[in-house]
Length: 148
Image 1 (cartoon, rainbow, N blue to C red):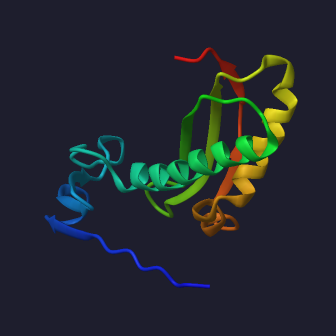
Image 2 (image 1 turned 90 degrees about the vertical axis):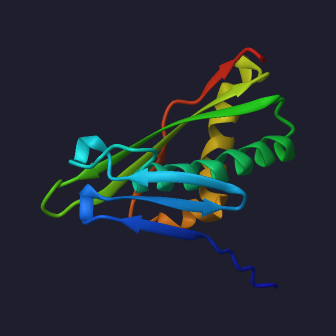
Image 3 (image 1 turned 180 degrees about the horizontal axis):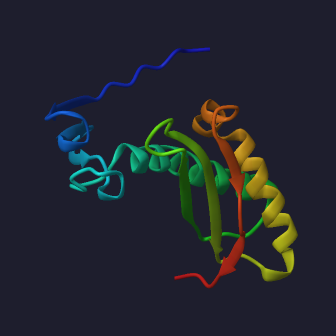
């Protein structure tokens, strides 16, 4: 088995929540700061959104693969996600991530099978497995929507 490495570069200016930075990810520059709701500048994205995006991007690709393997029809998957930070501001902890997948082009009569596939994908997604045990990571509502 091979070990793979990944690199990013970040720049930050300012103290704590009053600062802002840029992250160089492949060929993209993304501005980030603490969210306004946490007393930050609210410029660009936030570390909290980066965490959600990392988990959900892995989850969406894994879910699509599971659907294909199980022979469940799907044209696209859409993920709406919620993250919860508890005990802010004293002992802040990212406590929960809930993913709510919608399957475009799915079959409504097989909703229970899609739900099982959604849970299987959560258990297989390697980014999600990294946070399990530290963050409550759950599948919420699974729905079928018309293909776009």
